[in-house]
Image (cartoon, rainbow, N blue to C red; front, side):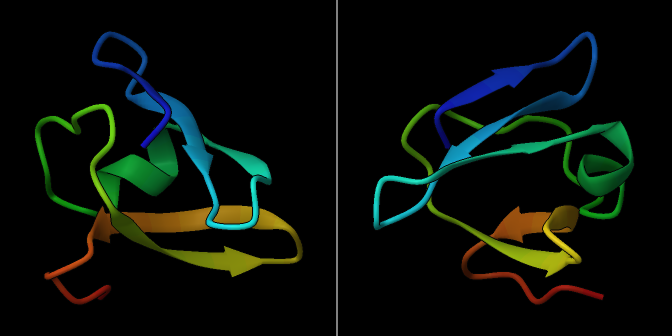
Length: 62
């Protein structure tokens, strides 16, 4: 996790190859989480270049 705004429930993820991807509140809301931490590893579903779901790496995506 590179950035996360609790007020907007959106942020950015830094991929292992250095690529930065943004996610919006809809993607975060699919996780059922309340917060993400800087540096936390996550798993994402990406459809057509857009993050549609994000979660802790240890938790499955629905």
